[in-house]
Length: 80
Image 1: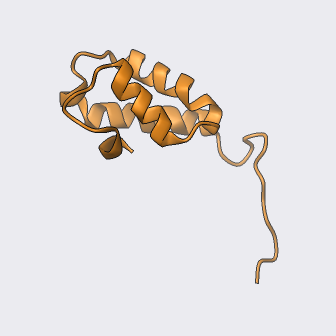
Image 2: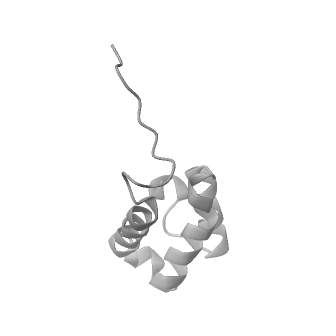
């Protein structure tokens, strides 16, 4: 039985901005061979912009990243 539900509307419990930046930085480093032509700062910044504080589905974010940066060696599905 559920006794309580917590909503973190003001990022008190989880600092989403910091978490997403750490995640996408790690992803860039992990898949660097596919991103050599993109700077880490550009990749991270563009992901954060497209993500729109979590309001955009990640499949859409990755499809846009792959298209905009002309990533050819890895699919948006693999990044997702």
